[in-house]
Length: 294
Ligand code: GDP
Image 1 (cartoon, rainbow, N blue to C red):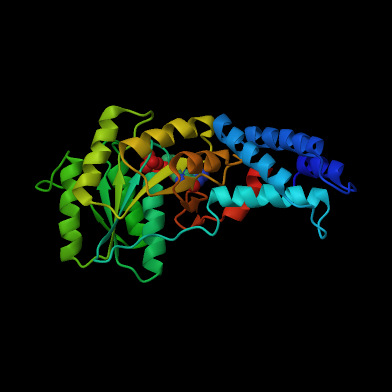
Image 2: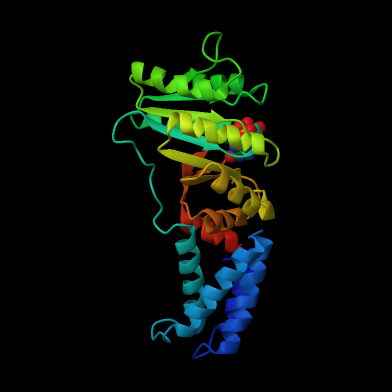
């Protein structure tokens, strides 16, 4: 645990019982720790409210001293908000399962597409990648390189199959996947640097064309306070069923994880931790809770 938190909890050590003043003082420190981790203010407020209620209502435990008791509550609440045991990918009853990726430009969608394809292939699936990001000049090529590394087919626009129309490419890719007996289709989509109506309309069009089993919202863990606004826009514009946090190899404390969970109510499925295809893991709420607390 961080020096800050050991300091806070050190003050509680040796006390026989949690007083309201102890709870308030601890809540203040936790609030600062969350704000430093770039958790959005409304999310911090909601968390502190729950924390205080629980701490006040908790019976004085025989086995734990007050410090341990507060630590336990903070950790349990963070893990609960971050998704408890976590959730796995949802697969379609009838193949192919369609996974659509959405998020701002630079969030890490294309990289994630390659990682997911590699990971699913290693589990015995027959995934296919779809290059429906026709906005960023190099995105199709980037996906082809990643697909090559993962040993996974990339369906990309070519003369005759909807050059320039990502919705058509996405629609056609599903038919192609069926013919090729692929059991999972991962659709990469275009983002912009900021939220924009045209991008949202295109993402919604792709969603309607492919009828996805998962719409995964990819967000850069470094974005901090902007996470709430971005997540709200994708929640309302496209609909989200799961989240991936990218760039967790950076030094961001990852407060965006809490904010996005709060806004979308959807589980964080994976963590992206580098530029290489293998820098990828299922999301561990317990590790994230410790990271956010610093
Ligand atoms: P997209 O615009 O959402 O498709 O984003 P990209 O997948 O192209 O990623 C944008 C940049 O971030 C690229 O230079 C990637 O190599 C890099 N990137 C993606 N994911 C990660 C990650 O988890 N960690 C780090 N360090 N870089 C990443």
